[in-house]
Image (cartoon, rainbow, N blue to C red; front, side):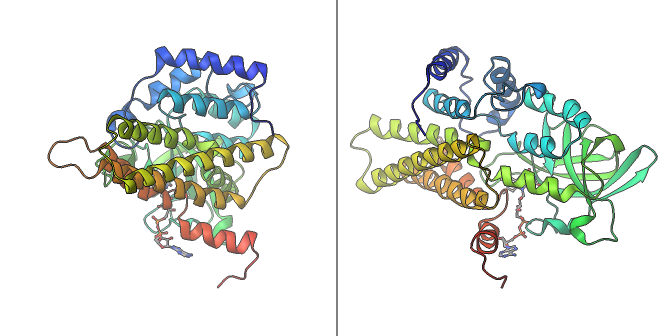
Length: 376
Ligand SMILES: Cc1cc2nc3c(=O)[nH]c(=O)nc-3n(C[C@H](O)[C@H](O)[C@H](O)COP(=O)(O)OP(=O)(O)OC[C@H]3O[C@@H](n4cnc5c(N)ncnc54)[C@H](O)[C@@H]3O)c2cc1C
């Protein structure tokens, strides 16, 4: 693939570059401050309204039907401008698009794409994380509705969400993967209680646990057929493991750019080991950028990847942790009230090996689905 810009891509690039000079919200690095999460909805809406979000998605849901190379341009320019990354809602869009009826797609997706409807993902439960199919949240039919009862945990953005994509058991009498259905559930109704979970780096707005106690979901808001929720879940998690879908390359490049700036400002302030750590983080994030370009190029050629998403997830974890290591190496752990942003970046990087499926689970998937090794 030729990674150079075609004339229309070059025009798009200068348009977003010019727009960013006046519209960069200047938020702190993601996952280091509650202020970042408070500014997320506004950032999403402003990117969308300016025509720079949802570029490769269908026009009928608010996208632009452009080749996915345009998403790479957006990521490049966001990173260069030090702007926040693209909001990561691609896995919701992909899951609902692939499994929802025409009615579901047209009612649910435009609000997710334009950022006016805020969503969270209610999959994990206290006893069902890696073994997600053991989930116990139930959905019982009651007239035109289902009544949802259960406990979800590690629910990102639950405090700000208007809606949750919930997996719930509709049939307890069939093998566990076959009795699960997917619903859109309003977070703003009686029977839903949300409690923030404080993360190790002090963030309180990213994470929560959610109790559903007879919350109502219209049967018309079931996504896919009854008992087909597992298929949707697999689509969602496979896209959640794709750095290209998440826009994380821009996040890593923004961080290494800021670290590089800090080292340049004080040429004698950092030793060889710190410079080596930074150089490694730069190499890793550039390697991920190239890898994402390769995956998107495959996609444009009609090649879709299945279990290879697990390789991408491991790669992304390796990059995030190299960046986190460089942040700690250069920023250190501050005393008293000094700025602790880099410590927070380091602490958050540890979570990448857990969210979206742990590294051990990715290795199991690679062993069984790609290498064809027998289950132990
Ligand atoms: C930052 C962050 C954001 C998240 N956001 C969401 C969200 O929005 N929505 C949501 O639903 N969930 C979310 N999660 C939850 C995430 O999906 C789970 O934490 C993850 O799937 C692991 O589940 P668990 O925490 O229950 O760990 P467990 O499944 O209990 O695993 C504990 C340990 O055992 C290992 N292990 C388990 N089974 C095996 C096995 N078969 N072989 C080898 N090792 C194994 C795991 O690798 C892990 O090291 C988020 C998590 C994080 C950290």
